[in-house]
Image (spheres, rainbow, N blue to C red):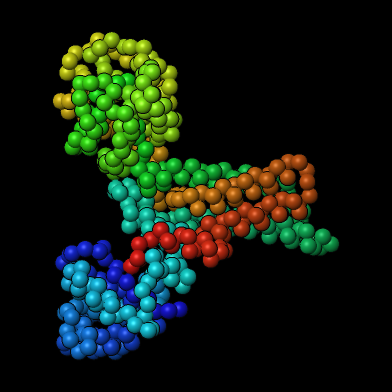
Length: 451
C-alpha cells in the first residue's frame, strides 16, 4: 500500500497539532525531514519511543517537535507509523504536512488510517464504525456505548449468532452428505427450538437500533401545542438563549425552528413547531400541516398546554392527534393560576411548569431523561449502531424466519440449509468478514481526514 499522511488533529489554532504518517516509507521519510537534538534518528528508534528535535525543509528549521515511532504490526494501522507533534498553528501544520508529502508519501483520504486498521486485521468493521461514533459522540451515554462497541461488544454478539448457524449447518450437512453412515438423523424438535432461540436473540439485538440511532443522531423531540401556549418560550428556555421569536401575538412561529441541545447524558434534536389550530390563512395552514407531520415522526413530543385558560377546542384536536405513549404533557403558565387539570390520556409523563419564570424545568428535564432511558440497552451486550448494520441483521433475521417456515411446512432440510446459509452470509457482511470493496469505501467516507 502507499504511504499516507494527514493532520490528525482538528484544523485551527491550538497548542499542539499531530501529523500522522503510515506505511512502509513512513520511517524512511521521517529520517529525511527530522533531526533529533540528542539520540537516534527515527530508523534507529524502537517502537513506542519518542524523540525531541527539529523538522527541516531545505535545511531550514520549520519547528521543534516530538516525533513518535510505532513499528508494524504494533500500531493503530498495523503498519509502520510516525506521529509528529508540533506547535498547533494552522499555517505551520500545513507547511509541515507539505514537507512530509513527496513522491513516496501521499495525502490520506477520509478515514484511510482506520480503513487500513480494518484491512490489516487490527479492527473488525463494527469496531471501526464505533471509532467514528466515538469521535462524534454528543453525550456521555453515546461515548460509553461507542467505547463498548470499539472494544468488540457487537462483534462478539454477532459471532455468537454465526457460531450457532455454523453448528446447525454442520449438523445438516453431515446428515445430508453421509446418508449411508451410522449418523443420527437431525431431530426436528431440537432444530426448531434452536432456530427459535436464535431468531429471538437476533430480534433482541435488533431492538437496540432505536437506542443507537438516538445516541448517534439525538432524540428527535417536537414541541407542539396550539398558538400562544408558550412553545417558543419553552424552546428558548431549554436552549438557554433566545432562539425562537416570542411575542404576545398568536401564530408568530410559522415554520419549524430546530436546535441541538443536551439533557443529562442525551442529545436532543429539538423542534419548535407552528401552533396546531384551525386556520384559513394559506401560509399558516402549511405550518400547521408540517407541525402535524412532525408529530408522527418524532421520538418524543412535548405537548404544551396553557392551564391558565380553559381547555379549548384546539387543545382537544391536538389531544386527538398525539402519540400518547411518546408524549410528555407540559402544563405551562402555572404562575398565572390553574383553571383545569389535564386528564388521564395515557401520556408518558405529565409535568407542570412556567417556562417564562423557568419554574419546573428540572422536573421536565428529568422526565425527558427518563423517557430517553426507556430505549436504553446494556452497552456491554452490543448494539446495532447504524443503518448498514441494521440492514444486514434484518436480512439475517428474515433468512432464519424462512428456515423456520420451511421447517414448519415440512420441506426438505435442503431448503432449511439454503436459508441458514443466507443468514450466515448476512452476518459475515455485518462484521466485515465477507464484504465488497464498495461497502468498505462507503463506511470509511464517514470519517474525517486524519482518522
